[in-house]
Image (tube, rainbow, N blue to C red; front, side, top):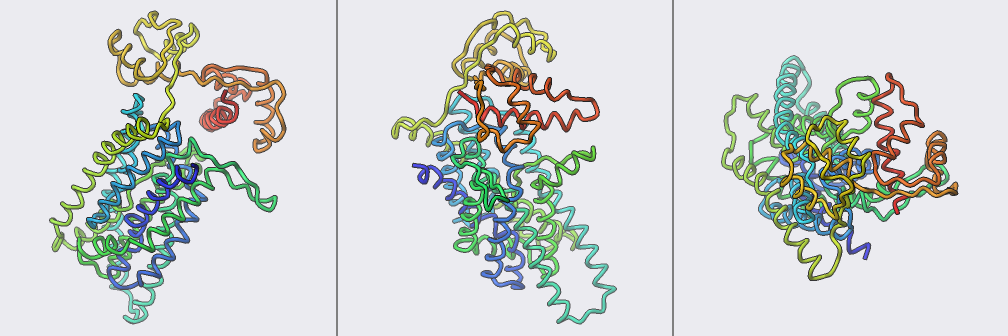
Amino acid sequence: MLLIYLSSGLFLGWSLGANNAANVFGPAVGTKMIKFRTAAYITCIFVILGAVLEGAGASQTLGKLGSINQIAGSFTIALSSAITVTLMTKAGLPVSTSQAIVGGIIGWNFFAGMLTDYRSLTKIFGTWIVCPILSAIFSFILFKLFVMILKKSKTHLLLRDAYTRLAFIIVGAFGAYSLGANNIANAMGVFASVSPFKNVTLFSVFTMTGIQQLFLIGSIAIGVGVITYSYKVMKTVGGDLFELSPIAGLIVVLAESLVLFLFGSKALHDWLLTHGLPTIPLVPVSSSQAVVGGVLGIALAKGGRNIQFGVLGKISVGWVLTPVIAGILAFFSLFIVQNVFNQPVYTESKFLFSERSLERIEEQGIENNLEDLRNMEFTNEKKLRKFLSVNHDLSRSEMEIIHEFGAVINIKIPESISKATIRKFSKKNQSIIKSLSDSTFVYKWHLQEKIIEKLEVTDNKESKDSDRVKKLTDKIIEIFSI
């Protein structure tokens, strides 16, 4: 059953490789600077490295958009998204697996009666707009810079050609790594919260987490998609949209790679956070959008001539239709899986409003009188939302706050905790968990309060410790949920 459930994620990974992963070498293949098979193999290697080493960051944003809590639900969403991407690939359109999986998650939210986190959705939508624009800006600037350098250079044409081929390989490898780090969340992110894999330690030195194992098999599927079915999309991006010279093709790949790296590198995100600098959201963006933006940037740098607006319009239509088709297909597929095959595709949320939880809600600045919620229990999110809509005039953000402080998690930390259970935690975190032994927590926020008390958060470490509290809380919930 595990293999069956994960098969849709692998199918989506294959679709991603066939459609999106090829974009890192599309211009190189389109300009005949690199052979297709060489490009495909390099892409495979570095996609796997990026996915395993840095793939966890972008998947967290998808988790906030919709926390899929049954593996059959994850299977159905990934399958619906994969079918959508495959249909678009067959049409030769460089569509976005990011858009497909987001559409699928929203379809699951509607079916399960779950609230869609509109802050995460807005962040994701924003990147869909920013991604091609930013890539176009990068390619425009880089093209002007390269032209200026080449005019001053006296390098022989043959030597320049050799340098360009080498640069394609280096930049393409960087792009494939960035793609793996950013886009593996599209293929396997919906399985993250229900991952069946446990942490394993290799040679007593390197620990590979369950999520890394999940992303490893997903990235292998991406590689298979690149090798077996990506040539047609490479041709569309590399030559049909705008006729590229080898140098222009190299710049497009570099611009795309930079965009994917900025939105996918957890190491960069953590470095900016540590140094008190503004962070870039870890969001799975579309490599196809980045490539198309890069190509348009080159075209604009050349005066905007010879842009194939018919091809551009066709690509744009694919971008709009992808999330809509994936969402509708996911909704009806979930109905079939649940009612025909009798597989649970979601677990209903439970909400309970105690006196203390109502106090916490009031502390968040909600002025509405919520006394009618006192000691009320709701068996799912849809019923809570309906009750609030009928009886209270609340904004979306206020509803989300009420949802957060009323959600029941039911955590039981035993009196006696085995060393094996917490051996992966730091010594300080082990001490915190032990201090919470023989305790029961109904609410997530209550557990967080207790952890903060133990950490004794200071003002100058607030942001760092807040991030640490969230991670530790989620891990405790994962291990000790009743």
